[in-house]
Each structure stands twice: as C-alpha cells, then as structure tokens.
Image (tube, rainbow, N blue to C red; front, side):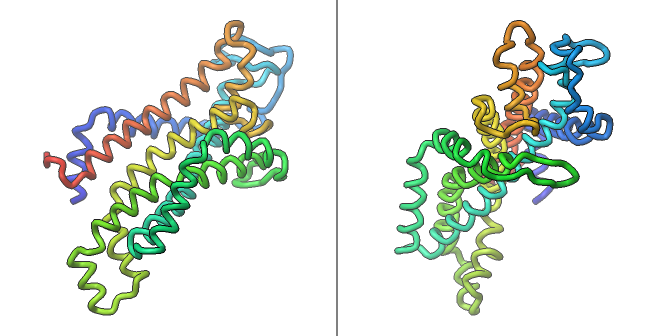
Length: 293
C-alpha cells in the first residue's frame, strides 16, 4: 500500500516540488539558527538602518538596523510553529466532533452539527482581529525551547485552532457515516468491542487520508491568517518576529526599502504554494479510486 501511494505521489511533479521546497524552508528556518544567534537577529545597529542588500547583510537591514536575513530565519520558526500548532488543535477538535457526530448520529449528531454550523457562520478573520485585539496584551511572555515568545503567540495559535476545525469535522463525520455500517465495524460490535475502540482503532484509521490532506492545507491557511492579522498590527507582537509582522514593519517603506517586504513576502508565498502543492499530491496519492501507476 505504501509503495502504491508513493508511486502515485511521485507522478505529481508539483507535489514533489512542494515537498522539497518545504524541506528547504525548514532547513533555512531551523538550521539558520545555528549560524545566526537570536541576539544577532534582535541586535539594532542604528547607523546601518535601512541598508540595502549587500555582502554583509544579504537581505538588507530594517528600520532600526537589524539584519533582515536573521529576522526571517527566526520569524520563519514562529510562523511555521504557529501553523503546525494551530492545525494540531484543529485536527483534535475536528476529529472528536466529527467522529462523535458520525458514529452516534441522532441527537448527538444534531447538536454537534448545529454547533459546527453556528461556528461556520462567524467570520474567521473578524473573530481573529477582535480576539487578538482583546487578548493580545493579556498573556505574559513565555519561555519555550530556550527562546522567549510574546504571549500573543499563544493567543494567535488558540484563536486560529479554535476557529478552523469545522470543515474537518464535517469531513470526518461524512467518513464515519459511510464506514460505520461496513462489515468490519458490525463484526467488531458483535464481538463486544467498545465504542471507543471501534471509533479510534477501526473507523478512524480508515478515515486518515482526508484528514492528512485537510491538515496539510490547514497549515497554509493558518500561516496566511497569522500573516494577515500581523500585517494589521494585531497579531504576534514584537520583539517576537514572524514573517507577518515583518510585513507590517515594511508598510511605510514599500518603495524606498522594498527588501523589507520582498523577502518575508517571498517566504510566505513559497511556503503557502508548497503546502498547497503537497496537499494536492497527497489527495491524489491517497485517493483509493486513483488509477494505479
């Protein structure tokens, strides 16, 4: 089965490009920290403010003389971390709600789906802006993995994760509705297997393909959402850098210092495109109706 999926995936050239690009972006964001310490990324050399790209500063410097290359490295760590942690919350909630609704049906299904539909009617970006504005300065800084993050990172992760699980829940529900009457589930019930085991050991593993695809694409959506509200000045707050709030800092220098927005914008573009290409490839590779290679 694994070899068949790999053959299907390998035929999708843009998915291969996306996977390779993502690996390189992770190497850039994580491996770059071995070359440039965080203190260097935050060091303000004011005499060199708004220096154009050169050999010493390949991406130039920002408005207070910080190296943009080093800032994009550490900003990339935060942007990618926000995307993955937000999707983790999305996947956990989406699977729980969708699995319970699809498996039990009846009143449980009705209640959970009405809650899901109510959440879908709330504009995600509007809720992000309001909640980020309200809670952004309420949470103190957090020390994690040897780094200090502004409390707004936690706020953004929670808000994005808690407002993006609904589509996955509907996907999981549909999978459970189609699988729960299959022979292997009926056999498990007949042998006295608990509902918990049937849900998580029998049905869920057979629903994993659309969950993987949805989670992959969810990372791109989370990164874009963070970049959007950070660009508005309501996302992750300094001194913690993200690609999104670097774009916010470049807002007044679009023509005079284009390197301030070009490099973080390019990294966001490459990340989102790569994730979408990868998601398309995984969807085709994991589709059981896809023609074998």
